Image (cartoon, rainbow, N blue to C red):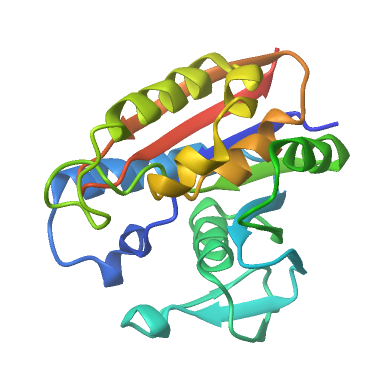
Length: 221
């Protein structure tokens, strides 16, 4: 049974060497993510979205060189180098920050239906690290260009994560999430499929760079 789950975003800027310099908002986000990951046990399963379904075992290692800096991370102490997608890189970096033993990464195709996400969530076991960003369309300078629907969408997500409202997460509209550039929809709906009684705490929810980032910790009630 899953006893703990942590929700974090996955901007490469979480990694200090990839950030442009001192930024209070970024430091607060980073601290929240590391604190949340630190509540998990020694062995994790990470869930992120990708172009196709894939499982990456804990024997993998990779680098952020594709994001401008050759910052290497491992999914366990003895990882073999390979090209890793962003969710796996962030999972590996957070594992190292938290001092965890290992993390296996489950990548889920970006177009996966809510019911199939929930089915996967029901099958998972162990401590979960859920990786995904909210809308990238907050404000005129946002990466995806401003969309007036973005604030309401991410307010709903934040409330659902703060209350462990699995039904609200399962009701997220895939088409709307895609329009708003919200890559977290699939992983959040996998989390929602775990069901059961949860106690939740929302540690962070803001859109400091035009992209919404949510950090939450769920524990079984």
